[in-house]
Length: 424
Image (tube, rainbow, N blue to C red; front, side):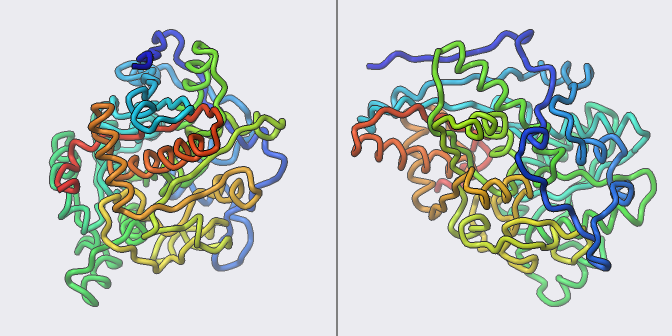
């Protein structure tokens, strides 16, 4: 039996800055565009839905952004998160690859989403905002934001994709526990929602529709701002604490990663995991980044790289990304957090440049991978994170066939304890 390795950094070793990859990219991202004029959106236009501090983080090219002390104190409840070697999986697969997973499921609401939720709640509270409104797919983002709003004295309202609202009642109850108001989307609370319900009273919903509802609610309210759990630059920025911790933990082990894997929906957990390692690849280091997405919503593998709206109603600026089209409504797969039609502009450009590769997986393969991981390693992965597990198994089996060593690291971005009905 292999040696069980678990690396826990002391709290004092937790990174004190987020990493901004925009400082090191050899190209400029295509700017968001005003859909009416097709001209770049000025940062001040975003102040209608975001606080000034987050707008500044969205556009800055500073390499290191200090994490506020108040946020660090909240991070210390669950960070640094452990890096664990999956020796039982290695032995079962009989692979020469060494497999490590970063376990974000130890956060207060069970996923990586809390990393940016706490930061966003803090900055909004500091600027006098009283309520945050958002959308959620599987409910991990909504529960993380509800928790974070409770921590910083804000109200929270969440438009939850209707099919997930029905599939995952425990997520709704968790949001309610932290004071969050949860609306099934499409809802009768907005004009956008009413229109979709009029055409189909049983509409399953989509993240694009839920985003439209959240934005409509915000622009018609006072002291209310919008909070996004993925896609935008500042969200991926906050998540880089994951990759920064992985760097330190691998250094302790004397390991250099050759493959880094994460599931991909909008890009937050994947970006937070791989972006701190991008400068190494740009410098010529042999390292692969694999984004694992569902075949049912294959934005990176089958989407078009072009400008598109971030929401279904066309209320957001146009973003340059891989997209399946704003009107795309994915099948009701259980990985609700990965049912987004588009992708983060940063991740999309890195895929377009060949720096990141993307793979897609059928739902059956991901659940088989998740069940195997649970039986071997003792953790039930969230359906979203199961895509990363499936990708790791593929790569470990290739390493076995080709008789080569690999150091595979993946982000186990959330637990599946509220998703057990999906496993049946």
